[in-house]
Image (cartoon, rainbow, N blue to C red; front, side, top):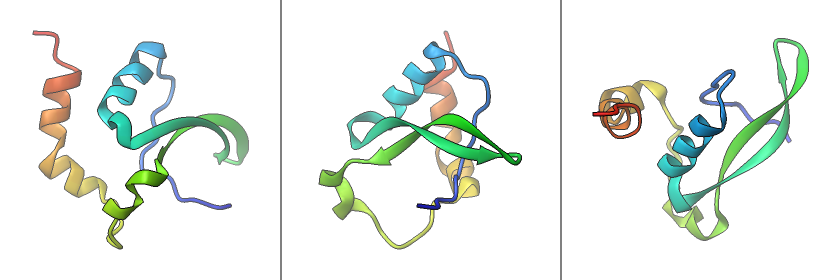
Length: 83
């Protein structure tokens, strides 16, 4: 199966993965997958929408610019600020 990745993070640690798991919540499950990056196969972590939430999908593709405009500030405030 060929899937286009929307977001790629490089060299994140287990604490970062825990933050991403929390952000994705119960809607998604994380799974190790083999991907091709810059011409070589590597193991990556991917988030898959759980079957029971597929009815929430629409036909509109995910857009990074929309996430940045509408949600990035909240993501940073909630998951990256230590205050």
